[in-house]
Structure formats: structure tokens, C-alpha cells
Amino acid sequence: MFIYICAVIFIVVVIEIMIRGTEEILLARQSINWLTTEGYISQSKVNTSQDSDGGTVYKPVVKFSYEARRRKLSSNQVYFGGTRMSTSDRSYSRKIVEKYPKGKTVTVFYHPRKPKQAVLEAGITKRSFILFTFGFMFFDVGSCIALLYWLYQ
Image (cartoon, rainbow, N blue to C red; front, side, top):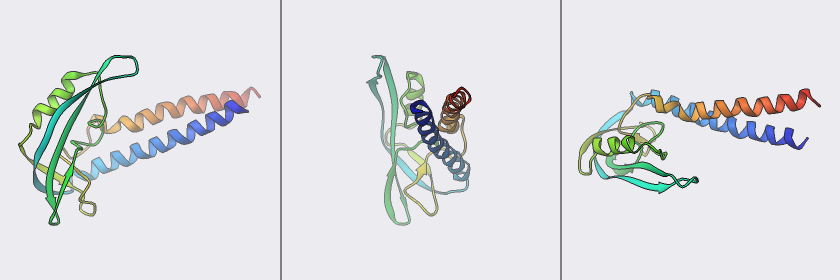
């Protein structure tokens, strides 16, 4: 029974991840119609850290400032999906930072009703699907465990 309860809890958590992933995909899709304003890159660097296995991981950190509805705002989301995550691919992080060097003037896409929500690259990218795909894969695993437990009880 314990395994079944754990599998159900696992599935519920994974469904939440899939919901957040779906929201991210929808926001990415909507962002192409968001309002735009001029902004500038206030910080651009690659953070380096160690993962749990002792390997080196890299995270692009790009912060930008902009003005929307007469308020000065800032964000660190280059696009939907991925730039907030660390990766072992140093070249990916370096490309993002090189594309958005400190001081560069950029076009910022911001949500018309929530101006604090902004990105530099509007629209859906392959990385927009990361959360949903991750959730879907683990949903399958949890469902199989729960189903197998139920069948063999």
C-alpha cells in the first residue's frame, strides 16, 4: 500500500509540473503579441557551479531593465524555457551571454496586464517544452508503478 500511495503522490506532483509546463508553452505562444519597449542589459555573465556528481555546470545570467507603464522594471528571462536552468554545455551559456552583452540596447516583450513578466525573445522555442516533457516522462513512470502495483495486488 505504501508504494501505491507514493506513486499517487508522485503522479500528483508530476501533474503540477506538467501544468506549469503547459502554462509556460502558452505564455511563450502569447508573448509574440505582447507590448514591446526598449531596454538594456544590466548584467550578463556565466555562473559556474558544481552539480551533485561533482561536474561543472554553467548558467547564463542575463538581467535586463526596461520601463513599462511609467515604472522601471527588470527581468532575467531571456525566453520561455531553459535560461534559468544550469547545463553542462558551456557553449550554450556562452552564446546567450555573447548575444546579450552588458550595456546592449534590446527590445523587451512584456505582458500587457503583468508588465513585470517580460522576455527578450518572444515565441515558442524547443526549450519551451522542457518542463512539460520532463513532467510527462515522469508521469508515465509513476502511472506504470501505480498500475503494476494495482494489478498485482
